[in-house]
Length: 157
Image (cartoon, rainbow, N blue to C red; front, top):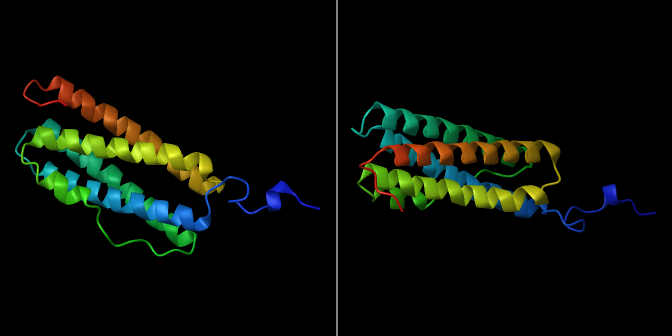
């Protein structure tokens, strides 16, 4: 007899362990880049509201770095130590509000990756963590967008 619950994840349309580990590492590298960009941006002289927003984003990104590392290790993988290329690209943007808009586009990239990945994750614990990360990134995008809209000197895309 063959039972669906006993079938291989990939056979059932879910991502394989290797696919999941690769996706988690890619997300980890992106989150690490976001953490470093937000930290550097929080040191800006743009005012308390900007610094507070960047610190909140940095804290959130760091939380997801820890979760992704923990999940990779739980799946018997080795978390990447790399930082995504996004880091250097973002820091090359000197104007703080332009950098925030770029950071927001990076958050949107993470949202798209998570939206594609989560339906393919069979593991309930991992799925719950990825859904929480997705929701958190959506909130960060909304907060940053509202900040940019409220700031008349900011440049918008």
